[in-house]
Structure formats: C-alpha cells, structure tokens
Length: 318
Figure 1 (cartoon, one colour):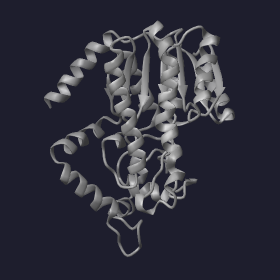
Figure 2 (cartoon, one colour; figure 1 turned 30 degrees about the vertical axis):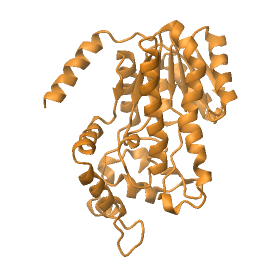
Figure 3 (cartoon, one colour; figure 1 turned 180 degrees about the vertical axis):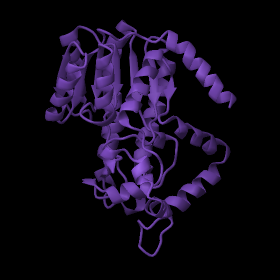
C-alpha cells in the first residue's frame, strides 16, 4: 500500500511539470498498428508533428490521415525496415531534414516469436526477432542521439514485461526485450540527463500479438488464436488506447520506467522474492499437457470453462 501511495504522490508531482509537446517533432517506429499507431494519435491530440515509420506504407498513410484529423500539424510517412541499418539512418535524416529538429524518438517496432525453444525447427529463422526488436532500437537510437541532445529530447523504448517475466514459449522474444532493457538502462548512465529515456515494459495490451499474430516455430508469420488463448488465458488485455495515453504521459513526465497494465508490475516482486514459486506456477499453467496434447493446458481450460474471454479480451482481439 505504501508503494502505491508513493507512486501516486510522485505521479501527482511530475504531472505538474509534464512536457508540452505541441509543435515538437516525434518519430515513431512500428507506427502502422498497435501501440505505435495509438501513440501517434495521442501525440497528435497534443499537437505534435509526427514522423511515422513502418514497412506497411498503406497502413501508415491511414494512420497519418487520422493523426492529421485529430490535431497533428504535420505528419511525415517514411516506409522503412528498422532491422536494416541504412534504413534507420535514412528515416532519421529524412525526419530531421523535413522538420529541422527531433524531440522524441519512440522505438516501438517489434515482432514476437512464440514457440517452445526445443521445438524450433530452425533457430536461425528466429533471428529477425533480434534484428528488429533489439538492433532496430539500437540503430535508430544511434542516429537520433545527436539531434536529441540538441533538443534535450527523449527516447521512449518499448520493451516488454517478457524481458523480466519468464513465460513459456517466449524465451527468444523475452531475450530480445531483455537486451533492449539492458541497452537503455546502460545508455541512461552513459548520457546522463542530456536525453531522457523512458523504458516501457508492456504486458498484455491490445495489439496484433494479442490477436494471435506470431512468428511460428518455423519462422513464419502466422495468425494462431488458439495459441494466443494458451498464452493469455484469463488475463485481462488492456485496450491499446489506454496504454498509449499512459506511455505518452509517462514520457512527458520524464519517468524512467513504466509498466502497462500497472498490475503486471507486481509480478516483478514475485520474481525477486519468490522466483521458484513464480516459475512453478507459470510451468503448471502453461506447460501441463492434458489428453488433448500440447495446447490442452490448464491456462486454456480456464479460459474455455469460465467463458471470461468476453469480459477480459477487447472486441478487436476475440
């Protein structure tokens, strides 16, 4: 309870000094869907200029149109693949040449391999997850830092609670996000207060991933809602609009860390003080096999028997 009260008081103090981003320039990777898309809308409502980066140009154009309609004075669409270093150099240069400055960099692009490690048919097929999730953040940050130092700007690194919470089938995904967290924590020590860094560790948030879009054990992008049900079970999925608002609020307040939904953070205490119990419960819920095979887990049975999907899953992911 004391921890909750302290966080509330700190939030109240920081909110008084929240940054006004009207007219400032925000570059967002992975802006075509999910958290990146809705962060674009949240920044747009606050009057920020946007540079939107993703591979799917048609979706980016739709996001750009909506962002303009809700308040952004200027939106630039830059199709690019963050896993390619020259693409990252280019989108930073294009954004700065167009706007003349850069104030916030949001490294959000990511892909999610979901598979048991031993069942991966060719582990090299999962390498794109590290290229996108980790190196995509590193490349963009590398080229953006000189501009962010000039503006005393901010970096928002979208990692994942899987970076510190060990969940079956997310070993490789969690490793990429652990690397992101470690990178930004160390970078914060190196550059001090010249550039603010907010590390975000989302849990279950409405997105393509919670719709069941994964990188399979064969390294193929698939839609597998049954496997999603095994992994998510009866855990509530936070609407992405709420997550995006919390993240932008946190960045503007200059917070070092944010976990959304907030309740996920309590599992970190279990990891620190009762790691064996947490590992046992995750294994029991997500790995125990019934007569129906690998996906006949307790987690899936809980979802099917309780009928809670209608209550805890947003309509878009059911």
